[in-house]
Image (cartoon, rainbow, N blue to C red):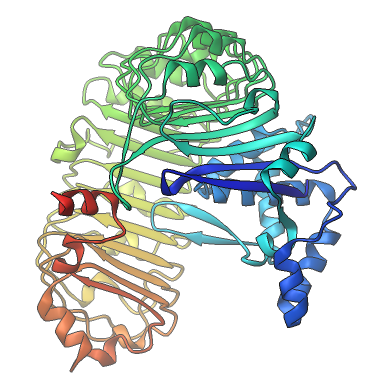
Length: 551
């Protein structure tokens, strides 16, 4: 689906309207892109020409996926799991008997990565998809607004709109809108914005887009009109940072809905009518789900939901045998055994997150020793206090990513973790209380596959030494919120694979030594991001910083 688009700025450089139109299969615009003409006059580089050739030779299904992934990236959506859900909703991944659409989407993405058309980057907490810089230059055509309106007649349109949330662009109702990513912001100064409410006129217009497949709203919403239930083709509904207090009962009419995401809301429980949406595959919600959730047997993701204080939730969870991604908040000691037993029976589960009640305060998780996780778990996140690491962790041979947050361990279980054979990503966010990390953190050959390591600790002062041969695959090392860290380890200079070092913030003494007598530790690292605390206090590109500075 080759794309053409136009962009119109509104109040401020970060606000505006960007509309993309799909050209019919086999057709292209007669006018070549301006960027392509400039490239031709200057002489196309071999890399640019190679990319164009690869794109033109892609089969239609991969070309359509790549174009939509590019469109998502222009809307600040590059999280891999998110992109997969959007590809499904847009109908770019056909449903076939015996195949799982999420797997097909992931396979298409991998094929594009292998071809060099996409790049995959693990950003500590998420996996991002990056489209080549050549894509916009060679495969997307910018047109004037009047040309866009003429060419867009009866063609699928995808819109990204950031404005004051008062109304949508002229002629919007006449377009065949398939995707709408809308944000409601108000400009305070040249670089400062704050979220405002969408008007009811705006939302009524949105609810009249009868052919829309993807709808994502980011901004204040008092309530959604009942007419949202008339969007019978809708497959993806995302409500982020809306503060919404209630969803209309008509949401149960959205029988084709695959993804429902409601986060940062004031909604305490979803309406029972969501149980009518039998095709729902991904439910992302940061509060309670209604009784009967076990009837949504097609769920693949259940993220952010609260475990109930009784055994009812655990009983229903055990029926969701297709689940692959499970993130549970407010895990209580009461009925923990029933919950753990239900999780153990989820044989398809690959990602699991357990969060204690008031986890941000370091409230302990229930005793995890009796728990035995499903065998195929690849991602595990434990958020809350731990007395000690459970023994079963050493047997998780398929584990790729481990997050330990607010664990408040007194000793770090290096003897368990460093020999996990497939562990690639380790995040230690206030995981254990120590001022000094010694060489025992990793033996020679330890963490054989580890590529990214993030450490966050207000207590940490020094990492003394890394033994030769440790971390043989490490690419990224990040110290986040370690303001008292004064010494990086001796031996860091011997890790030849490391490409990125981040210190946010850096203690002034450490920053000065790294510029001087200890520069040898980091001189071979190509990507350095070292910021002293005073540099983080004001960032002119940060809207919040600009707002505070203006006061």
